[in-house]
Amino acid sequence: MESVNAALDRVWPAQLRTGRLLLRPVTREDGSLVRELLTDGRVRAYLGGPVTEERVAARQAAYPTTAGAFTVVRVTDQRPVGLVTIGADHRCEGRAEVSYQLLPAAWGEGLGREAVAAAVSWWTDAVPGGGPLVAVTQKANRASCRMLEAIGMTVVDELDEYGARHCLYTPAVDQEDSDLRWVRLLAARRDAVERRRGAKARATAAGQSLPDDLAALAPEELARLCPARHGAYGRICARMADHTPDLHLGRAQDGAWIAWLTTAESS
Ligand SMILES: CC(C)(COP(=O)(O)OP(=O)(O)OC[C@H]1O[C@@H](n2cnc3c(N)ncnc32)[C@H](O)[C@@H]1OP(=O)(O)O)[C@@H](O)C(=O)NCCC(=O)NCCS
Image 1 (spheres, protein in one colour):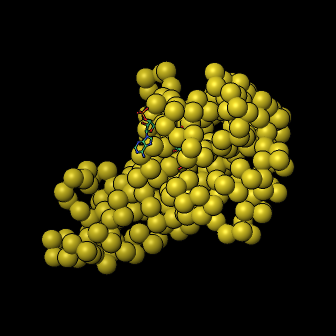
Image 2: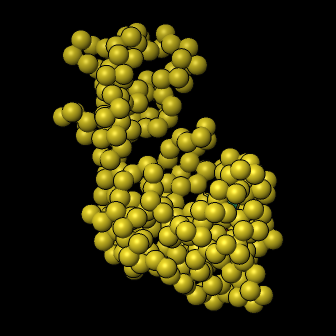
């Protein structure tokens, strides 16, 4: 499959027009927009907080040469109001990720929806073999989640990153079983990464040190065993309530509890 960067090189630069917006490649003249976005506590509330001066300068230099980085311009007053970027997703090779940020003065008017929907459709049309693109956002970032849902994206996974729970969204597709296939594909990719990192050995060692009677464990011990990333390979889950233990918790041949996932059995 063509890499995201190779596909971007092929289809970039691009310019997109919507009812109220123009999305065009970021230029050096957008430096003040980049600064405003990166240093605003509201914009950065779910993105790790305002960044340092050094990082502002680095981003100001990098954006204009980054394929897939659009400045969002409000057509009525020609004001740049945000950025939407499509780039390679660092979590999964070959997959594209869309990210977005608008100045607070432009929030709440549906502009985010308009801009992100345009970028997503552009990518889907321009790179038909590119596979489903993703958006990853903190679960607590309600505006971002609602915006993605409003443009027809659905959550296919949850993950912990930078100390916070995140939702992974992808555009909903027509075929009935596509969502399911996409979830399985993601799980398989994640399993492969986990396996390479030695998850099975770690999980097995941890599982074998568990007592037979899980009820003997204190709640905080159970919580430690189960970081709630259910279904991911190598994560031991020993809680009984609100779970489907047979999916991911089993016993090793010697009878000890062990992380369990059917797709990982052959490793
Ligand atoms: C996410 C963001 C781009 C949304 O832009 P926007 O133009 O305000 O979005 P829209 O107006 O198209 O839609 C926002 C939706 O969230 C809702 N919303 C807006 N602010 C909200 C808030 N503080 N809490 C809950 N919902 C909120 C709106 O009502 C709308 O939902 P609805 O269609 O169900 O009514 C903007 O909030 C932003 O730039 N945030 C900071 C950067 C960021 O967090 N980016 C996400 C990176 S992963």
